[in-house]
Length: 318
View 1: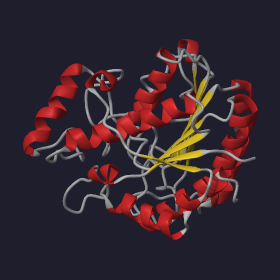
View 2: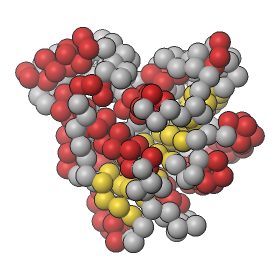
View 3: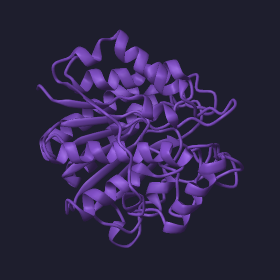
View 4: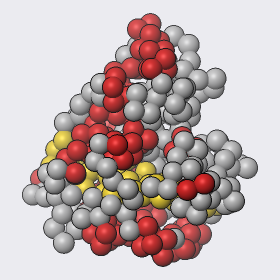
């Protein structure tokens, strides 16, 4: 099938870069863009370059509190201190940098819903730890949560699938939407007993109207392709029961062997097979509506290669 793929491409996404030796830095996106050039991805007839855009404050407060948005804005002026209690430092311009991530994800959502593109990819998106009132885990604004709420409130979709393969559990998505029956959720991640944020046990299946519509699959440290692909296979019937109208994939690369801060041992095959499955499901149920967000991944070569492999699946070359 020939699908039109929108790739968010622009220097604005390199602005989301914490100072010093912080693992979330601009080298990740710069390396990916270099590989995009080398692979001549932008020369494909079915690839559309999507220029990043800023989110406005009304968009940010779809999920975040006004007080938190104001707090980030203030810390952005001087760039001192931290935005949470742990590992998300402020830097000058952090408000604009994080707003570009959100705005770009929303731009891709709109383009998909308007049928300008079939699939969208924001390599800097997927900041799934940010909470309504605080930053967390390198994530300032939760673009994924904001995108889900835009799909629900503006486009009135009632069956949305969020699928996350980042090594870290997406606590900033699971808990805020735990009781929502319209959000179908799958998260394959390293067991929280061994890795931040310490959540996402298999017993967490949602609550209220959301019960049974949420699946958490924690994997033990050193799990590789065999364990991942078994987990992926186990949710195929759930995906088809969900009959999603729109699919969001958070495709973090930090589960690939060699990542400096996690303990999983996938190859890029995990990303290829996940994308292939969701691509097929999107065309079966969602009119092809598939948004992919880059997420984490701190071995820049591995992560970039995984993201390139995702693009190749989307454009029909793999």
